[in-house]
Image (cartoon, rainbow, N blue to C red):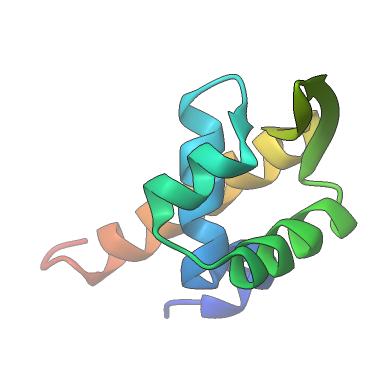
Length: 100
């Protein structure tokens, strides 16, 4: 039986999954780069980033580069949670295959 309750509800939402995937692929991303890559509005993106930060999955660093810039990265807990999330997904896919 597939146990979907093992999926991390924080990560599983489409927008947050996209953010986590990008953050897992690169050391850090600026807010503007995430916004451009994901084609999200400022409000939508910041809401998802706040949820991930509150869960301890991301870090944020503020810099002054002519104008303020915020950069986001996966925290160690976020990297662990994302790896666990992917493992659960892989398990679900394996069990859904014939002979799985």
